[in-house]
Length: 231
Image (cartoon, rainbow, N blue to C red; front, side):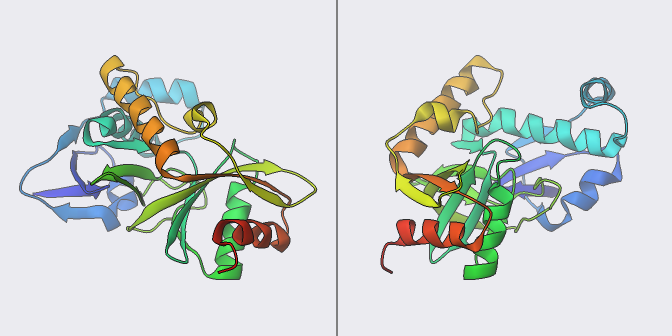
């Protein structure tokens, strides 16, 4: 049966419109059974329209609703949505997280230009724990730039981006509050608790960094020197 493979999970989505079919074509895969199903009702689409405002197609709104449903279920499988950009560089999976408009996309593109980094997902990757280790997965939900790859990378570093006139990267202690702002916490109580547990595991597994930076090449160079050391 044709389904969509997301973070190693078989998800049965039956879209009403072609938007999701086209958006997720790279992730379509035959599977004997689904891990879970996603069904978006007309009422959900209409509710999303009222929240998002005019100008969006029904297919796009259905896609937003579908991914929200997926994210509600992820903690049952040791997974969670991270609002950020994840790259693979030098054998490491590095996440850049920040409030919208701070510069994580610019920083991602600098690493791609200077070091040949591969963008796993530029906006909404899924992080899933497997055998005790976190892996970041690409998804077809990747922001307006649509930077994504149907691949995974072991997540080793999380960088909190802050704008500054001085480029400086330094390690920081575990900070659950800062990370929680960049994670999707489900509305259901049981999965919300699971998500908080996953957040705690993330901050105690990955190396955490504060990246104070401008938008120049030197910003990426300073961050890379700190993260990789002399290598």
